[in-house]
Length: 164
Image (cartoon, rainbow, N blue to C red):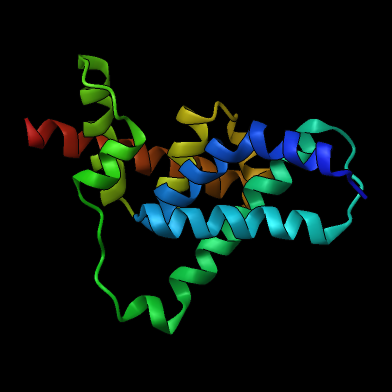
């Protein structure tokens, strides 16, 4: 069982990453906050022993992705409007410089992709995971993941080229 200080440290360390994953999956800053909160609640309740810090981080990511998928499958979620607008994109990259604008455009494009592609690209390019690690985290066959990764990159490239 973790102490309050350990949980607070873990929250401080991984809050933003989990929030961005939830935001990318759910498309709403408010839903992302719910997903982040639920992920950390589940961590506190699980009482699991982790091998190392990387195992803890992978568990948090997997839990956040599972939560988001459950929300996306819910009947309530299917009856509401999607709010993936500039407020959402700006909450990811609030700075007003050229790099932030480029990142906003890439995120806008990323949000147009299906979830199975969006997750892979986000974890690979924004969180720095290898395809093998993503395969383990998402519990997807490595060859399936490589195929999805190639299709996702192609879709992003095509969208960005057509958008210009």
